[in-house]
Amino acid sequence: MSKDPLIAVVDYGAGNLRSVAKALERSGLLVQVVGDPTAVRSADGVVLPGVGAFADAVGNLREKGLDDAVRESIEKGHPYLGLCLGLQVLFDESEEHGRCAGLALLPGRVERFCEKDLDGSRLRVPHIGWNQVRFRGSHPMLERMPAEDCYYFVHSYRAVPGRADVAVGIAEYGGEFAAAVATDRMFAVQFHPEKSQSSGRKLLDAYAYWVRSCN
Image (cartoon, rainbow, N blue to C red; front, top):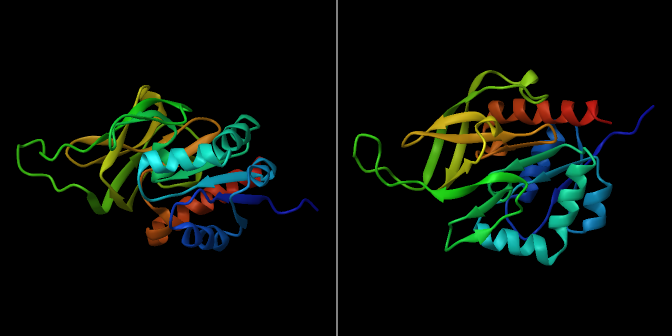
């Protein structure tokens, strides 16, 4: 009998790690919160959650050697799931608190929401609350998720992918923005599945199935 896949929830000094770990465990996964690059490399899947500032997150990942560990895990084909800041750091750069280079695993940049809606009215930033996400394209995660669902968001910055096909989930807030991005080895969402009740559980169940199918 094959062993249960081990998921590394990456501890790089950001918050919300324990609630993410508990949510993954409810989806039947064996989970460890780790800050050691070796543990990240040896895991069967990697989850990068986080709340906070882009520059702090990327700086902590690099200082601990976790950026290279995450990159090597993805290159080996271990499924990566990014949550909120774990989506944003994948891109080339962010404009948060001045230009800051990201991990450059996906082309594009992260920019602040405009504080004016499409009709010229004031748009509240940060974007907080439930919002509908429409999924498109093909990915192992999407095969086990609904085509549309509502999720909980808390963010002031949004990713602007350099390739249209990277954006596999679209939401609207002052216009359309990328709420989920993916490649064959990565899937990342701007919202918080661990705070999204049954909708989030479906997404984490899909991740559990994806990891098992790769091991």
